[in-house]
Image (cartoon, rainbow, N blue to C red; front, side):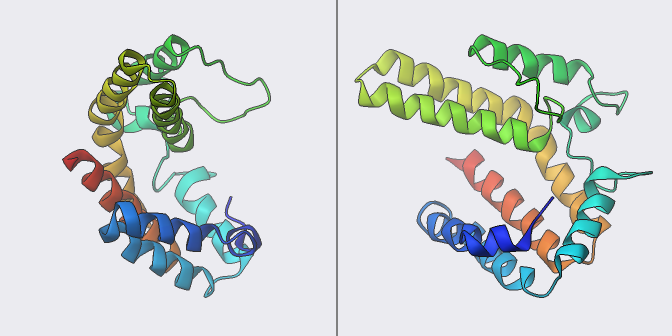
Length: 184
């Protein structure tokens, strides 16, 4: 759940904007909007909207789980979830028993992409070109086979499901960054 003081106190959004200006200027436009728009809302407003979009209690307006978009049954923990669990395990990753989110939650899948990128960088530092190439290939496969197949749909649902400018900018920032990543 978003906590305004964390976003502002640790300069998360301004840091995001700074990095995006270097790697994806098109997305930085929306991170600036996120930074400006978060000021318009209270923590309670942000939390209520977050719950409406991603938690429930009844209908999720924008389910943050890949399986809802990727599997025909449109339920969590489907075949696509098992696929990402297998990918995590192939990299030697195990789920922390204290972590309560599902393996195909957007935050988990994006963290896995970060892991692959970090691993590539570490391999390059060691001049292990074979390992670096493997991680690059894994990134491309994960992006093309998983992330690009459902995150744009989730972003569209966020935009349709809210009038909150912070979440609209978040959806735009995410989808523009993803689209840009697919080009490169």
